[in-house]
Amino acid sequence: MNKITILFLTIEISFKTQSGAGIYAAELVRSLSKCGIKVIVIAPGVINKRDVINKNLIIYWIKVINKPLLRIPSFYINSFLHIQRIIDAEDIDIIHNNEYAGLAVLGRKPSITTIHHPAYKDFKNYSIINKILNISDQIIERYIVNKTSLIILDSHLTYDLLLKTYTKIKTKLHIINVGVDTNRFLYNSNNNIRKLYNIPSDHLVFFQSGGARSKRKGSIYLFKALGKLKNKYKFKCIVSGVSREVNWNKTFQNAIIKNNLQDNIIISGEIPYKSLTDYYSAADIVLFPSIFEGFGIPILEALSCGRLLIATDTGEAKYIITNQVNALLIKPENSEDIYKAISELLSNKLLRNKLVSNSRKSILDKYRWDIIADEVIDLYKTLLNI
Image 1 (cartoon, one colour):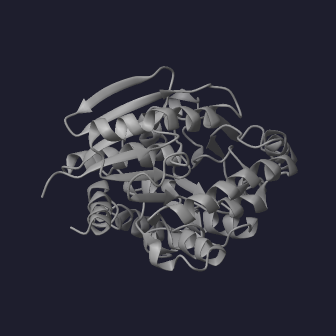
Image 2: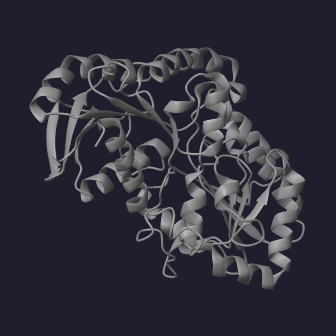
C-alpha cells in the first residue's frame, strides 16, 4: 500500500495556547506523521510559507488579515486560491477538515471533518451580539455536514446533538475521542506556581482551566460555591483564559465581587501549553464546572497529571470519569453541588487517596494520542476502500 497523504485544514494549530481546536490539530497531525501518514497542513499565517517539520509533516502557512471578523474570511479566500496547486503538488488522497477550516475546498477529494461541538449549541449561551454572529456558523456547519464524506465527533454528546439537528447523516458519523499527551502531562512536584503568585503555604490551591473565556465555562456557579467555602478554608483559585464573548468579562468580574472573592481569585490569562502541567500539578483540586463542552480536554490533562478533579457531566465527562473512582462527577449549573464536592474531598482523606491512585491509570490505555491516531487512520482507510 502506498503512503496515504492527507491535506489537513485548520484555523488553529498550536502547542502554545489552551485552544482546544488548536491543540487537537497540533497533536493529531504530529501523531499521524509518526504513524507513517504524510500530512500536509494548511493553516493561517503571517506570510505565505511552506515549512517542512519532518519527512511526513509539512505546513503551508496561508497569509491572512489578522483582525477580528477578517481573519477567517481571508483564510477561506486565500486557501481557495492556493488549494488546487497544493493538492496537485502534494498528491493528496484525502482532505481532513478541522471544524470549518475546509469550507472553501471540500468536494475536491474524499473528505473527513472533525466537529468539536455543534454551532447551534453555543447559540443557547451567547449574548444577543454573539447570537447574531453565530448564525453564520450555523449556515457554514450545515454546508459542511452535507458536503463532507465522513464526520468525526470527539464525544458522545456531540454525536447526539449533531444527529438531532441533521437526522439523515447517521452513517457519516464516527466517535473518536480527543487524546492527551501522557508523556507531557505528568505530575511535576517541582512546579513554581505558588512562588509565581505568592500563594502562602497554608492556602489551598484550586485551578480552573479556561474559566475566564465564556459563560459556558461555568465560573458563575463556581464563584458562588467558593464564596460559601471561604468561610471554612484559606485558598486561592487560579482561573485561566481571556474573555472571548461580548460583555462576558464584565459579568465575570462582577461575579467575583458579588461573592467577595477579590482576594481569592487569581486570573492568569491564557497559559502557554508547555506550562499547563505546572498549574495542574500545583492544584490541590482541579475544578471543571462547565455548563457545556464538546469534549472537555482539561479532564484528560488533569487526570493524566494524577490530580484530584471535580467535573460537571457535560461533553465526554461521564465516559471518562467513574464517579468516586477516578474523579467526582456533578451536575452542571449547580453551585451547591460544587460546594459539596469540594467539601467532601477536603474532609475525606481516604477518598482523596483513592482518586489520586486511579486518576492517571484510568486514561493511559484509551486516550493516548497514538491510540487516537490509529483510529483516525482506520477511517482514512475506510474512505479509500483499503
